Every structure is written in C-alpha cells, then in structure tokens.
Length: 103
Picture 1 (cartoon, rainbow, N blue to C red):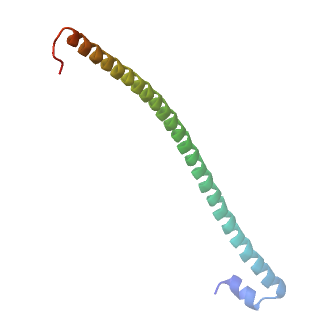
Picture 2 (picture 1 turned 90 degrees about the horizontal axis):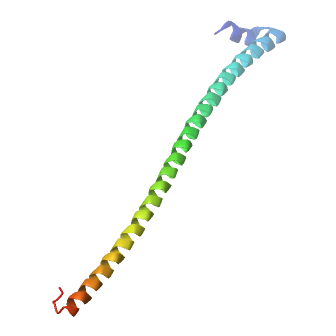
Picture 3 (picture 1 turned 180 degrees about the vertical axis):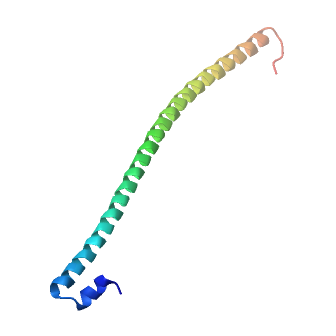
C-alpha cells in the first residue's frame, strides 16, 4: 500500500482530500497526455487524408484527359471506317461499270 493510499484511509480529512486531489491530478494529467496524443494522431491522419485527396484529384484529372483523348481517337476511327466504307462502295461500283466481278 502506498503512502498516498494509507493517507487516504487513515489520515485527517485534509490529508485524505490532499491525497485524493493529487491522485485525481495525476489521472487528469495522464488523460490530458492521452488526449494530446489522440489529437496529434487525428491531425496526422488528416494530413494523410488531404494528401490522398490531392493524389485522387490528380488521378481523376489524368483520367479525364485520357477519356478525352480516347473519345477523339474513337471519332477519328469512325471517320476512317466511314471513309473506307465509301471507298469500298465506290470501288464496287467502278468495278461493276467496268464489268469486273467484285468479291
């Protein structure tokens, strides 16, 4: 049994209150320390989250750029396919006019 505990059990009212006050003060100090650690961890997590959000935003912008380029490529491919179709139609008609069989 610590002297503080003996004081709380056997001391005068003032001594018991003083011992109790010291014990509560230490516990509050411990709690404050733990809360400060928690605040620091939350702040650190907030910084990490912010960094992740920045990276996600950058990634989203890059993806949007890729999507635009892909759309442009698809449009060009469609144009080329239409041109090929027109050329095939023209070739077929020319060959028919010339009496050549078209496969």
